[in-house]
Length: 269
Image (cartoon, rainbow, N blue to C red; front, side, top):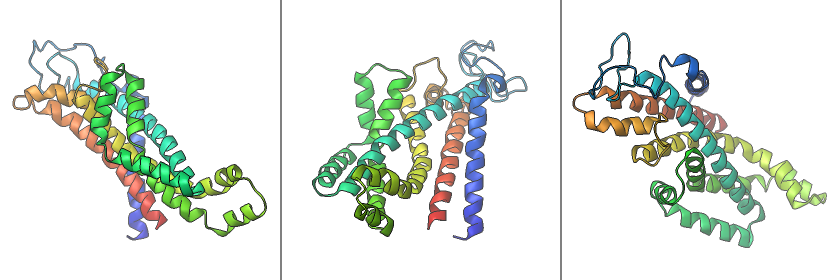
């Protein structure tokens, strides 16, 4: 892949992610209506897109555009916060496994392999069903079921960085294991963690949307893109725009993070 294409990929991805962040931050000022209030007298029938409501209204008379704008705040908050927890758990496990090796590596990687055999969505559903539903629960559950790939990639990179001359020199000079790991190995692994953060955020966004579609996401009336699609399933024939617009929002967010992540990944090669 040429340098120009890599640069374009990163710029486009960064612009898409930045636009989502701006929409999420400015949601109270960008949304034309209260996302939880009935602003149109639809009497149980969704309203078609119009000048007053560019993306239409749902069966309860709520403005779809306002709900999508506020949904960006919820989805990005869940995606970024859950990915931060994922990176913390997966990064620490991968760093410890690759740096210490031996029995530590064996135990941690076998535990990681065991977790990989469990479907993330099913595991998240099981955990949420026994915990108190809420935003914090969603963040913790998504973060705790999504760390396995991060752990494996960080471990592989740690094994490579640990054999480099500056790390060997630090050990020869008597630096302790904790100092070598945090001051010398971790900075070398950090570029991989940045790539995993960008790529993994798209995965956490999709997992959040899937849980919301199944009714296990953020409780209503808080707007969520996945829940909006679930609520629109009863009107797919008569009002397809109710599912189309939040679906496009999810597609846009996932594409933006993927372009950004693959741009960083291609730049490292």
